[in-house]
Every structure is written in C-alpha cells, then in structure tokens.
Image 1 (cartoon, rainbow, N blue to C red):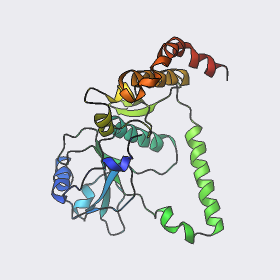
Image 2 (image 1 turned 120 degrees about the vertical axis):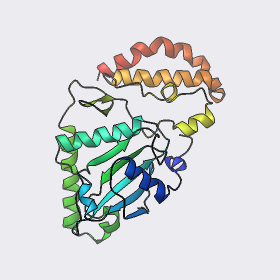
Image 3 (image 1 turned 30 degrees about the vertical axis):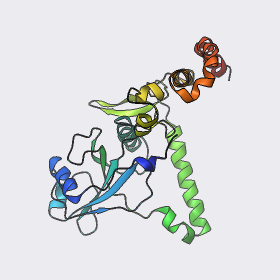
Image 4 (image 1 turned 180 degrees about the horizontal axis):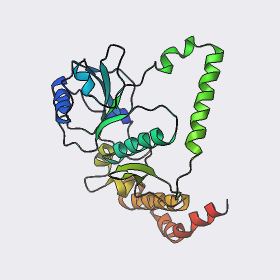
Length: 263
C-alpha cells in the first residue's frame, strides 16, 4: 500500500454542513455538534446531540438518561467508494439480525457523495459504555478474563452461522434485505493512491480483486492473480517481472483450483 488510510481522511466538516445534512434526512435541528478525537483510520467522527423534546423524533436510537439523543456521524474518506460503506452497513445489519453481539443501530447512511457534507457517511446510535483502551489498565484480572470470554463468544457466533450458499465476499443492503457483495480488504489500493501512482485510467476493479462475491477461495485467488498480471503489464516499475506473465497466464486457471481442492 502506498500510503496509510489516515492520509485520505476527510478534512473538517463545518457544523453548518452537518446541520444541513440532518435537515435533509428529516432529523431535528441538532443542539450541539462536536468532532470526536479518535484514532480512526477510515473515518472522521462527529457526535451530533439532540435535546428533548425534539430528540423523540430520532427513531431507533437509544435515549440518554435525560431524554436527549446522541448520534455518531462517521464521515468516510475516499478510500474505496461505495463498496466500503455498503459493506459496513450490510455487516452491521447482519450482526444485529443474527447474533447477540451488541452493535449500534444504523439510523441513516449514504454510499454516495450527493449530500450536504459531500462525503459518504453512516449515522449510528451511540453505544453505551467506555472504550476498553481507556480503562484496560484499571481492570482486575477477573474483569480482563471476562472480557476475553466475551470476545470469544462473539467470534463463535460469527463463525457459527455459515452463509448459504457459501461464498467469499461481503454483504450489501438491498431493498429486500441483504445480498452478497464484493470482498473488502484494508490492503487494497485506495482510490487516491491509484490516481497518483497508476494514472487516471486505472479503476478500483482493475487493480483490486473486488469483482466478487466469489464462489470459493480458488475463484478469489484466481482474481488476485489476474490483478497481479495486469499490474505487471501496465506499471513501469514492475517491468522486470513481465517474463513471468506467460507462465502465470497458462497456469492460473488451474493452479489455485488444484492447490486449494487438495487441502
């Protein structure tokens, strides 16, 4: 990867633009908007406060003890347009519907930039509690063991419900529910880096294996190999590897299939 995700985070979003966004999605006027100081890699995050009685209009979000509602606005950078936001919403929806793992409700989202803030976003209810990294050193050994047991239970739930039919990929929301979507990986080339290092003609799909969902690991590995061959063909810095392409093109339809089905 040419750069880290933080290099492509959105700049500051004005409270006025966020207020216009709330109005455009039929939410009340926010009483307070504050940037959240975090170490997020892919999002800038803001807390949007609503005071009673208008807070009661924000359906789906947990109310605070005083009746107010605080929503978390995650503003996405231009790393992997559309597919990352859709996958995040799809996965959170699936987890809420199929497990007991606590995840916040998705209040609104937009996988386009056609909105008052000019970026993709997800708007979530604020989950109660404190971030573990802020209190971990104060926890007893018993509390830490309980935390590990809780995480183990979450992993068991996530892996205990295989997808039917099985595939390699993500999830995206559709009108009638959820559907299989492209695989997402933080090691993919991000759009700003592609434009800088690969030129204007490069596309996310031509460099990254995001054409899934794939029907198995063999298909996924074949797609990866096809992207590597394409990269060697088009990028000057990889020209020394071009004598490997004929062997790769002959073997790749069968190589991964034979390797993976033998294990």
